[in-house]
Length: 245
Ligand SMILES: NC(=O)c1ccc[n+]([C@@H]2O[C@H](COP(=O)([O-])OP(=O)(O)OC[C@H]3O[C@@H](n4cnc5c(N)ncnc54)[C@H](OP(=O)(O)O)[C@@H]3O)[C@@H](O)[C@H]2O)c1
Image 1 (cartoon, protein in one colour):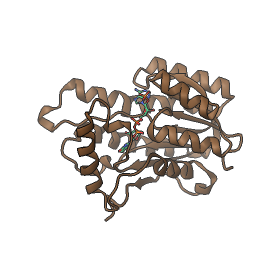
Image 2: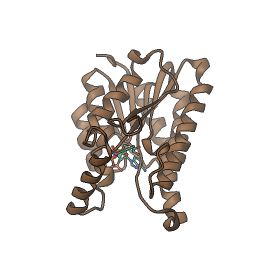
Image 3: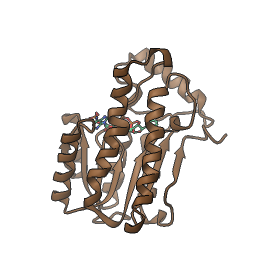
């Protein structure tokens, strides 16, 4: 019960890693609020974990700020902020359009930064922020340029936010997944494409398989908890050894 009565906000808490984290936080006694875009999955997960659910697109700054204000009011403050929402997308350098680049950066970097900024006044001193990065921020994967640049930018953002929050003793850490079996690579893909992608992605992981949402979420909970009370500014790669081996 590491989060008993802690007020935990998960931005992007209705699918994949965020939904897995919601269930784990709830199991450990957290009072939860979740955001996401898909009303149906948001309500389903929120019901499951007795959370406040606010539909908000993190790429729409006005909507995102309003959601954070509402959540902070309803919870009476925030102890843990998990900035997890993100979108994927592959295009080789020569195929990247402005629209494609902006679509990814609008959510993964700009949206994540301004959501964090909006939450700061509501965060408890001594609280904790965990940001979902990606091994893509440091791995040179062809076709991943727009996503990787956004996540690399987010890594810089997390470190600087953490430095500026030192006087308030708010720890800021990042959890960076390797290939993880979630909706992110399945959206708009055929069953055959998904199977091919799973096979390819499993092949690049030294452990020989993709990660599961809960395996990433457990690392996020660790970083958010007092178990990590002396860990600040890290980027924890949870990737089956992709970068290390
Ligand atoms: N899966 C991987 O292999 C992998 C690897 C490295 C990093 N990551 C990162 O892990 C994080 C979670 O992704 P996932 O793998 O769990 O994928 P997912 O199953 O697609 O979940 C993504 C989550 O982010 C939310 N989200 C996306 N765009 C949003 C927006 N504009 N506004 C609000 N919420 C938004 C989604 O809500 P809706 O469904 O309502 O849109 C959902 O809750 C992302 O930051 C992703 O970049 C994933």
